[in-house]
Length: 430
Ligand code: GAL
Image (cartoon, rainbow, N blue to C red; front, side, top):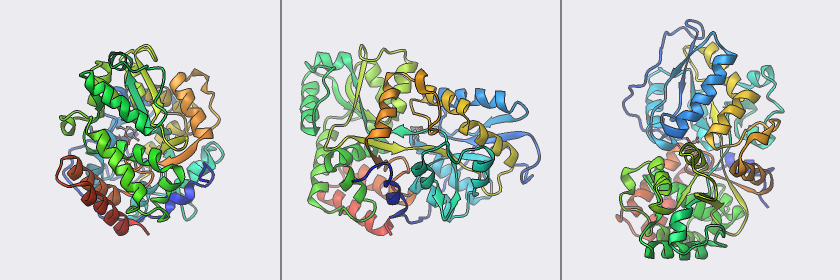
């Protein structure tokens, strides 16, 4: 059985370092070369540039201003969901010796890329200084730790395997919004009904959102144990059960909007807000978008985890780093202090749709959706996200992205797709 206690063991297995693509960079932020001294500012690099994600960052910045009034926050955000543009830009800056003071990364395999390239510092002393050692779940801290050193501080925990539904579109299709489908077949039957009713059955956007869908299907179809085995070699990517899951993914993709590749996640979620789509499979940053649009839960939108073999929490956590050579180390430490504080975690997560990574916060202010996430994180099986850096390092994810975009664009068939996934696992797993 894979549960919260032992899922970590999976995270450090199957990790390889790869060269990362680099591209241009126009992100702001002061490099004064001061090596930790200099101006009292901090450039914070994220991809929370717009909409509800920016609202989450703004909430955190408010707390930062109260806690560290002597520092100026410099917003280094680069737009593009899941860091689709930010990660390349970040890599370019790191390689050029121009790091931001702190940057957003994901707990798990993604962090290993930066650690192996010696781009981020051990921050375990800050865990002692800020009293964080017992504030986070041990298995989460293990995901941030390599060889006894802790390389980042988590701000939140997101759930990736959620289905969101438009009450109006579902009702129009003769689907009871209050009754979630029991399994993947029932979900696909509902997609068929929605299509027949003339709405987009399943809204999706650019490649990373398709991988978000793929991982949810793999979790539901394989179950937690076999899914987690994909990353430690105990489940073969060329197995018949993976073929079945890919067939289910292919089927679901056939119900999606054809303009998907030009869209990002807020556009796909917007289709539910506009009631032009019935369902969207997306991480729970989507709930922040519904809240920002002032929708009322149940009356206007519903949610459930993609149904499958087990009760699963598709796991990812944003965490912040202290880069080697950060020009304003003091500012970075102040930021890390705020994002890990009780006040910071509450303000941020209330706005972001995620749950606090700290286990000692008073969570009574969280709404109904986040209460379900809090419970699921405690009780359900944990499966690390592929699309969001928890399960595989960036180079492996890049190969999965290439294979997936070729497949969903119709440039490869299912057998070629599966072979490309097998090859990627062979290339990148330990
Ligand atoms: C994830 C990130 C979330 C959210 C999402 C969509 O990778 O962890 O915080 O920002 O991308 O952009």
